[in-house]
Length: 114
Length: 86
Length: 166
Image 1 (tube, chains in turn brown, green, red):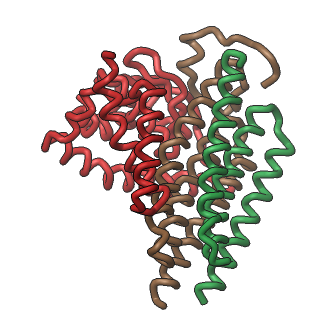
Image 2 (cartoon, chains in turn purple, brown, yellow; image 1 turned 90 degrees about the vertical axis):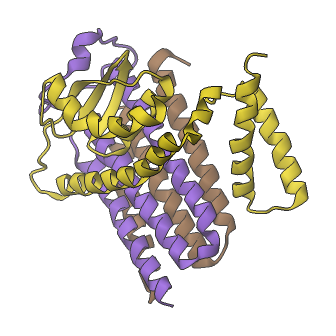
Image 3 (cartoon, chains in turn green, yellow, orange; image 1 turned 180 degrees about the vertical axis):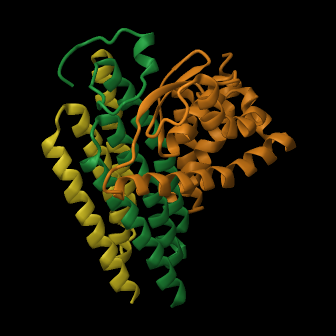
């Protein structure tokens, strides 16, 4: 029974990280910072939840590991693709931004409202 | 006890999805909405798995995995479309 | 036919993935998985595998690859707590910006691994790669110059990845 409680605590901490990720996308001032907090503070939440569920129910561990690995491999790719596309079409950065070396390198093409 | 903790975790996850929906509605542009959608998936996937354990049905794990794959394809396709048009 | 070695290498991991996903060692499942693995490997032309992928089994590379896993886990945990702190703090201590860093890695797969590792640790997000330079969005810019940013973001990962993919 103890492993049930330990696993459930992991799931709870994971859920808290997921919540923080969602809070981040509401609070952060521009797209890029939302991406920082939103799509990536949630990776640890994801992995912790899967780990907790695996502790609670070891028979599922293999599949839960696969889901966690899937998130770890695809998440950076989709957030990178989204960030690059957003920068190319000129989604504005917050006034807090201190530096943008990418902008100096390439002219920003303004296209549709994305 | 463990069930209670699971229910609490599910409730926190649900609150998280609500926040993500706030950003989904507010935007401002399509890119921000795409991020909100991505986060929505990332929260829903582990919550599906947790609910699967709570309900004692393994099939929810497969649902979560397929949901993740579809969302990844969707976000990547959207980014590619914004990048150079289909 | 020059892709043939890559295709043959790709079949192995794909088949293992099928077995892990179905979670059964039933002969029927194994045969079905084998057929699907061959089909996918041929359709993808063996990407992203190549005969060079087998070098991972050299003892030194393999040891570094194993050591990289706990290093990466620790980096993700530390960075996640850092970002969580920034989200909760009422004044939101952020100082965002896009900085340029340089990498010594030469192979495309190595650069992919570096870019993914940087993106996975919250606080840094790879926006673009041009040649040996990566443009990285940083939630709290500590160094604006290339040398400082490279030291801070890249070198920890590079130490391992240079051996694994170099």
